[in-house]
Image (cartoon, rainbow, N blue to C red):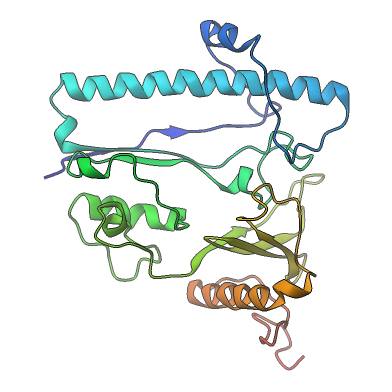
Length: 280
């Protein structure tokens, strides 16, 4: 029986909100390391580029320090004889763009922002160690999963999915096409998407998003297998229109299921959603 579920969180904020900071020994180890910027790093200003490299060195030093502390936690579980009754879960609340697509912070629906670590160590399934799962999951899945791992049954009205069967190898895939993405609201003047909102649908291979101030219209579509850095927006590409329409229906179905208040305009043969004038 599992008596404990521990889930340490990593919170990362852009430097003008909370500075990147790491213990000096870790920072010194990263000072001279070569930093290779990703293919979608689109900041040409040399001063910003240099500062971003410095920030990334500190960011990686923070990660190394955090990894050391997770190791301390693991050692404590072993020394306290708690390892065999504790599931350890590691995740964060959001990612960091750090110059990818020429952007910083987190509000955009790119993978660097919306993708977060989700690692799990369950002593009951040692043969699953090192397993990588590729089905998209979302924060709604966390609470029912924590209950499932503890041997409890989630309430039937929870919107998320218990991932325990997938984690334990009792299921090969999720019984759903993907997950809903959303940016609800921004009221701060000058911030990205102030007065705007977006929704999206992330399947294993593709990502589709809509954007609008009063109603969402098709915005982005990425083939993440062919274009993992999301440099080629395929929203108007003729060969992908069938797949885009399919993902629009996935998004519409999920918004209906969750009672989303966001408005979608009619497109791809689908009716509008939350339209103020349904007959339009």
